[in-house]
Each structure stands twice: as C-alpha cells, then as structure tokens.
Amino acid sequence: MKVAKVLITAEEIDAKLAEMGAAITRDYEGKDLLMIGILKGAFVVLADLARHVRLPVETDFMAVSSYHGGTHSSGVVRILKDLDQEIEGRNVLIVEDIIDTGHTLKYLLRTLAVRKPKTLSLASLLIKDDVERPHFDIQYEGFHIPNEFVVGYGLDYNEQYRNLPYIGVMDTNSTSSPTDVQEGFKLAD
Image (cartoon, rainbow, N blue to C red; front, side, top):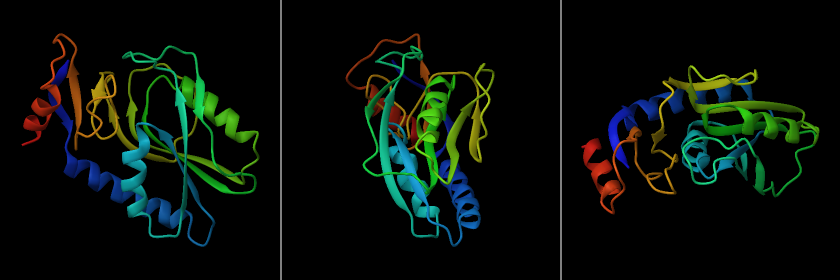
C-alpha cells in the first residue's frame, strides 16, 4: 500500500494542536494534570500537544490494541502496557491519535474510571465521521475526517508510515513495496 493523498498537512496539524493546547492550558490552570498517551499512535500527538500546553504536566503511556496488524478493529481489546503510576485523585487527560469505532476507547475509559481519577477527559487529534460508536464526550477535538484508512503523524499501516509529518489517505488498491514510505514523503513536498 502507499499514500494516495494528503488529507491534513503538517501546518494544519500544528495549528490545531496549538488551539487544543491553549484550551487545555485554560481549563487546567492551577491544577495537577497527567496526560496519558495511548501507544503507539498517540506518541507523536502527545509530544506535540504537550509542547502547546503552557503548564507543568506529567505524562504516562498505555498500550492498548484491537487492530492486530489489519486495517479494521478486531473488537478484541488487550492492554499491552499499563500505566507506570497511580491515577487516583488526579486530573487525567487521555490523548488519542484517532477515534474510530470507539470500542477500544470505551474499554479504556471504563478501565481507568474504576481507578478513581479526580477527572477523566479526552483529547483526540482525529475523529472519524460516519462511524457507529458508543457515546462519550471528547473535550478536546482535532479534525473530523471521512471514514477512510489514514496514516502518518503516529498512525500506521503494519508499523510503517508513523513518521509521515501529515495525515494521508492510504491507497487500498496498491501493493506494498520497500519505497512506499519514501514515496509518501514525496507527496508532502
């Protein structure tokens, strides 16, 4: 597979993360804040979003999987890496790269809620439209995107393309080749 088109540019992403960071700064002024990135995809989003938050914050990571190498969620959720610290009584902000079907996120929210955080909020760079999912509040929303398979900016296809500086739509009709990532970077130029 290779990237068919750029959906969201690096400049648009940075502007949106600055906007989200300003809102988080305003909402958590004077409060303890723990930002939790959901690996692997959210590592890029968390790093760049945290730089736009003008407060002291702590970070931690969880790895939760429901994809298992494909392009669609399997519906079976596994915690691959748990938090390194307790969250009881803390203001917790989950940072996601993308919200798709929401099944993994629903499981994660339930799992973290029983640990009794003071607050539990959600930030996501991408939210897929036209996808049936359980309801949950997203306090800090990035971009709403069509229901297409996207890569870049932390999102992958078979562990590749995470390093693209933009969000691209995959050409699901093409076949993989070793030069696909290089070709993806050419699209950004």
